[in-house]
Image 1 (cartoon, rainbow, N blue to C red):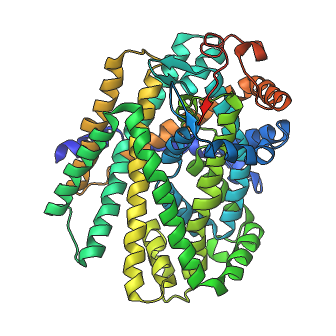
Image 2: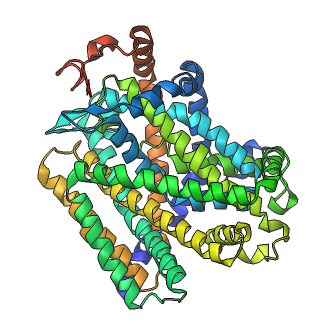
Image 3: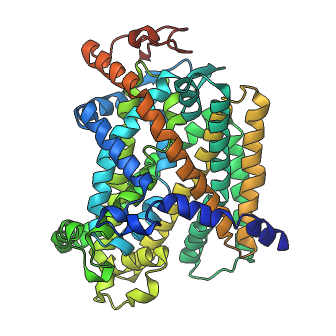
Length: 518
């Protein structure tokens, strides 16, 4: 398998570049010496600062319109073009609710202590406003492509920067690279999870060269191909089913663990709130560690401000652009405030870092999966339920990875519409994802390789997207506030581009889009 090593070595230069951009300017001594502030890279300050600005300027839309967003979600809608607001919500959740909800939170608590959860909640609260802004812009500048809507970062980026086609194409290519190179990593997560399920069921250990792993590889390629080759409609049909199932199962399992360990709840809240401002020496003892870890992991999990969820917001057949904004804000709430918090409950209540669980913390803390599974084992009552809990969590982990994987491919396809609306390019994107990048990830797993340099490509493109997207949100924020003012003044009345004195592709051409309710 020398070809894998060659490919991995080819991308070795990515690692220091990605690390530098993510850490800048904390990797500059003068800045790093500043108390507290010196622990925060510019990317995090940009994301949090813009979230605070959007919250204040919209009079905390994430709070005032939360109930309205929920009511829109539960409405039964018949759509003629695109997908329903609820389907768009599940599609975006398929991307948000991923392996990071388990591994990211575990990493944040392992490094920053329980207090990282508090700051994760804070970042998510302001991130909800950011998600609202980018979703509204995605709706304002969406376009029709056959019987579906396309839009998102490449579309509003092009329009906001003088309608320069080169801008739209560049942003589209950026996201396509990001999405496709994330696929091998998600494939690796799937193998890890499904392997754990099989081992838990059979009480056996399987090597990567075993027939089981070859069967997993074959089924994975086939299931992804069948799903994505059916296009947006088939992907949303899958996410409509899987997202609620995986969320309910995961939340249900953690709630059971909480009930079994109810006396530990006061400990959980005490550690989270105390650790937010005065973390234990085990985690460095510095206030800034918990704060930095919580904010960074929270924003990376819910993806607010990165522009990577905007394709789902644009795909919805909404009556008013703001409605999809309310819904996307709820998506951040679901991802961080609920699902990430569930993971936090498990890690904090088990408190294995204290040594009370009879576990050598220094030995396992480097492995996020080991920390998480060990925490579950410590909380479950008895060996029988231990196996059930481990299998259930592994299954949820697999579902998280699968929905993220298919979401990546379909979002890349939507993004490619900024380059050309030709069906040939769309099919090419689906084919590359299903028959090149998924098999590549599968073969790497079978070869026993981690390919760390390949995974770093997504880290690099992710930070570039933050720097590309947030300035665009600031530029287009005036259009968002005008749209919100119109929504409030008319109670969600008919909207068109003329409402905000802007010529748009869809809202001007087709006029206000009314969804018939059944």
